[in-house]
Length: 421
Length: 213
Image 1: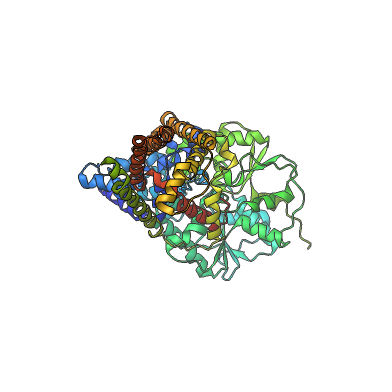
Image 2 (image 1 turned 135 degrees about the vertical axis):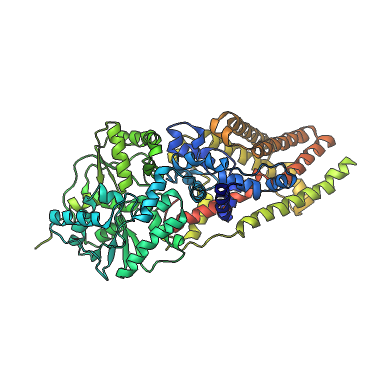
């Protein structure tokens, strides 16, 4: 048995919990999940059927945990798992799945297919069967602290620009602050207006906040590639930074998978609960608005729609908040046909956008979002995830759609009421 | 001789395999290890688990139009089979005399015919889809085929037994039922029971995160 196969099987066996047994015992291979997956609906390739992507784990279950599998093995009729049972699924799991979780919403017997796919990803990552682009990004995250190779020096340069543009001081390493804000790589490299917006909003609302020199990066490549050990290592950096500054809350930025990594999976990755609260920026803005601390003025007259980032809405439970925030600042807002918990992914989640090999497939998958946007007649799409925004900007440009992409936090900042001097 | 075997030892054996097998399979799921979730819950897992067990009977409206055939055929088959199993007159008598000691009002003959037609049609539609649809063809296993064919045979012999009223056909039906009971715990037929913990696990997961799934 090869070392890769051995490592992969070790993980798959460790992942075979009661849930996996219940799911695989219940699945009748109806294939309904295919119609929920944009990689299938946009390609009509049956291999992209979500439950098929779990096949390495399911095959192991059939061989080692089912009655017939055990009998076959005992009688020598069963072919042992081979390395190809893992390698043949690499493309399906990494290129053809954005971990959007729509399949988990539609399965008639309730299989959390997305969760099972993550288990397969975990096995492949541990076996070293992962795409080059993601391996590189993960290595940079471990070595440098950021998958895009962003260093503290770059962050300082951005802070300098933001301070010049806003006239506001960006608090750095303030011990005892109420909130510690994190940034995703995209927000540092592509969308510095996010930090600018935070500065304006928190100044307006009187929020005590800080950035941390030790923990500014929220992006978690460990989660994207499926390596729980690395994911935990990256989460631990944030935990250490927050504990050092003794903050009460950590703000997850406009980044879907960063929210999943920090808010939901992080404590499990590091094996302990946090001594602070994790709050997504949309949750915090909604709380500030409800408390009357966030006062906006004026409304966007443009026809706007909202793209629900899967990890924040369907897998994260933040559904009402973006609507609460958009309501007061838009006068021509229109929902997409399938929105909220049943939204369609942009096509670039789950590490697909960091995987150069998946570029063409990602753009094909984007066709679903393209038709959704076009059906609304909107000229602007608001979202709350820098990765979704980047993927959709690429899709919009490629398809010459003439639609503007907007970050929700920036929109709020642009509509802040002037504070009385 | 064969009659005694089918009505006697084989019946008790198949029933024992069915009951012990189902309990063992469910136990292996319910008592299997599950890691504790250390994240702070936003919502309650328990009520969401119970809700999801029932809510998944109805597909989300956003996908219903794309899966009309398997949903409609699935309901036809399952409801028809349920009606036949528990409300066909011979089954009510059999359950009263051999297992429960009490009975209930069986469905009239016309309802039996409707239920049988619905379940046959549903099962045939589902199986044809399994054979024709590229997705279903790719993911189906031999177990899916055996389970469907065995169920079809049980239903077919059941109709023969009812219509002809002969001992031979009654024995044939009972024999196929016994094979079905023996196969049940080790097959995809187990979804009859395991869909409950499956839906509950997923519902609890979503519920903790405050998501209406």
